[in-house]
Image 1: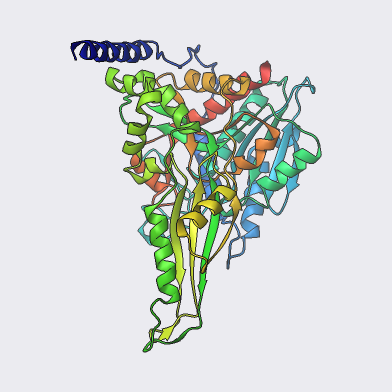
Image 2: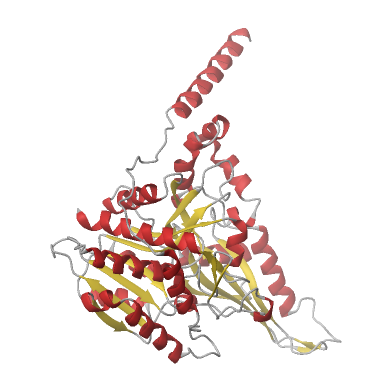
Length: 483
């Protein structure tokens, strides 16, 4: 027995030693970067141009609602007037109903282009009377630009145009071609805008060096255990699917019900799915996030994330406890639409449920179908599933990633840079066939309150933050187009 205890003690000490050594070797992945090159920005004038763009009610077409064509046309006319160098020196193409593609030709056409993206459409503004400033008035007040679209996503579009206009004014000429793509229906799927631009580039045989679209912000207080702001760069996004479950029966009068109605059968299926979710997995963009922020944490947290080979189940259980983090480690199901009988005394001849499914990269639509069939295990429940697969995970060993990381650190030297998984959909997903370096980032500091303003009340952007975003895009373009 004594010998067994000594062996166990030796194994424990060995394990502790392995954990400590791995933790000590878990070094920072942040790059050192020189200061950004000077780039003059008139913050007040830029804020005024953003405010003007917000006054156009560019709500994309959706079920039961037409796009306001005149608003999109007026917005673009404003761009032509406010950014004359862009429209004089860059080739411009209209794509689809309201999307735009600009090409700034580089001096070395053999180099693969870089693509910067954004979208011109916005979501409707509910309860407009409750806003501090009307959502489509484009008001500059208290150091902020107020209006629907400041954060999602006209702020980014205007910052990109400001950066390109300023670089042209300086006489800058890129070696590598720059493309700008501005969709006009991202909020309703991007099929007429970004998808068409991507298809057009594929037809032309264009391969892109890198793609930068909207995505994660510079999170202030968003990553527990990390005191510094973290630039959250989306390297992948979840897929989105619609799963429909239907149960049919003969119906009849509710006074003479069968042992189980169509609604009962459907309810049992939904309960089974709720009780048997996809298993959580720390992988892809979420694992990469902790690999980049883990070294900046306390020793105890560093030990945890330096040894995910042992502690992954602990981390997954903890993350599964909150909806926001649970969504980053598993494919999720949410029942969003239910219907059965039209009257209280009529048995339903059909009961139907629609589930919104968000697919973790690595899980496919066929995986979803198989999971639902296995869990429900009832031939009476008919299943259909359709939607978009999750995106691939972009590489972190490319020049595109290095220049993005460098640019962020140059303009925001107090900020850490980390990859993460985007749980919402963006237009960037259409461009993975054209590049293995597709990234999603908004160069604006946001805390939890700011996040609630996106698609919410009092959406706003700091005048100074907008100026910093312009400086970032200018530096990113310099870094990305010189090599």
